[in-house]
Image (cartoon, rainbow, N blue to C red; front, side, top):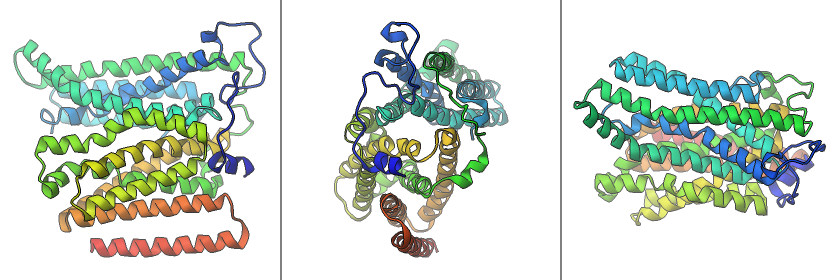
Amino acid sequence: MAEEERALLGPAAGDDDGGGGGGGSLGPPRALPAVCDPRRLPHRLLVLTLMCFLGFGSCFCYDNPAALQTQVQRVSSCLGRELGTVIFSIFVCVGQVIFALGALLNTFWLMDMGRFVFGIGGESLAVAQNTYAVSWFKGKELNLVFGLQLSMARIGSTVNMNIMGWIYSRVRDLLGYTGPSTLGLTLMIGGLTCLFSLACALILAYLDKRAEKLLCKEQGKTGEVIKLTDVKDFSLSLWLIFVICVCYYAAVFPFIGLGKVFFIEKFKFSSQEASAINSIVYIISVPMSPVFGLLVDKLGKNIIWVLCAVVTTLASHVMLAFTFWNPWIPMCLLGVAYSLLACALWPMVAFVVPEHQLGTAYGFMQSIQNLGLAIIAIAAGMILDTRGYLFLEVFFSACVCLSLIAVVMLYFVNHLTGKCFQLLLVFFILILEVTELNCLQVVL
C-alpha cells in the first residue's frame, strides 16, 4: 500500500542512469555498445521506437472503413508477452487481408469476417503493448512512453484519413474504372502497414528475450499462474481506475462520433468546418501526449493530473451544452484533457497490481472499456433521437461526473482506512444511485 500511495500521489521517482524498467540487478557479463546494452538509454529508445510502431499498422487499418466510407457504407496471458504480441500482430495482418479480399471479391460477409479477426488481434495487441511498456519503463519514463504510444496511434489514424482516399484515386486511375477491385487493392496497400507492425513485433520479441538473458531477469517465472480468476483479487484502487476509464472515455469517443452533426446543427458550421473542429481532439493529442507524459514523469502525482484532466473535460462539455461560445475553445480544452488523462491514467495500473497480473489487468481494463463504449454509444443514440443534443451533452456531463467521483474516491482510498473510508464508500454509492436515477429520468 505504501508503494501504491507513493506511486499515485507522491513525487516522481528519481532517475537512475543505469536503471531499466523492471530490470534485474545483474548486468551483462561483458561491455556492450550502448545501442546493444539493455541497461543503456539508446537501446531502450530503440525498444520504445519499435513499441510505438507496434500499434501503428493496427490503428492505420482500424480506420480504413471510415476513410473509405464513400466507397464502403481479450488477451490470453498464458501465451507470454513475446509470443502473444507476434500472434496478435498476425491476427491483425490476416484480418486486414481477409477484409481486403472481401472488398476485392465484392463479398460483404467476408469483409465482416475480416474485421472480426482484425478486432481479436487489434484489441489484444493493445494489451500486449501496454505490458511491454511497463516491463521496460516501469518506475522511470512510463508516463512519457504511454504518451508516445497514444501519439503514434493518433498519427496512424490521421495518416489513414488523409492518404487512403488519395491511394484509392491513384488505384482507380491505374485500373481505369471504379469497382470492387479498386477498393480491394487499396485496402491491400493499406495492409502493408500491418506487415510493418508485425516486423516490429518480431524484432521486439527478440530484444525482450535477449534482455532477459543479459540482465538475468526471471520474467513470468514468479511461481504464480496467470488466470482470469485473478480478477477477484483486484484491489479497490484498480476497480476505481476501471470506473474512471470507462466513464471518461464514454464522454469522449461517442461524442466525437456524433460531434460533426452537433456542430452543424447548433453552431451552423459547414460540413468542412464541423469535420475540422471535430478532429481537433486527436490532432492536439499527437504533439501534447509526449509532452504531458514527460511532465508527469518529472513531477509524479498521477492521480492529481487525472483529476485535472477530468475537471477540464467536464468544463468543456458544460460549455458545449449550455453556452454558444466559440466551440474551438472547449474542443481544444477537451483535446488537452484527453492527452493528459491517457498519459497519467494507464500507467497507474502498474502501480496497483503485481507484475504477474499486469496482462490480466490491462486486458480486463481494455475489455470493460470497449463494453462501456458499446453500451454508451447505444444509449447516446437513443437520447439523441428522442431528446436532442442538449440532453445528450447533459448525459455526457453525467458520465464525466461519475469519473470525477471515482477519482476523488481513488485519492481517499490511498489515505483513509477503517470507518472513515466506509462512510466515504456509502456516500459514493448514494451519489451513484442518485445519478443513475437522474439519467433514467432523462432517457424516459
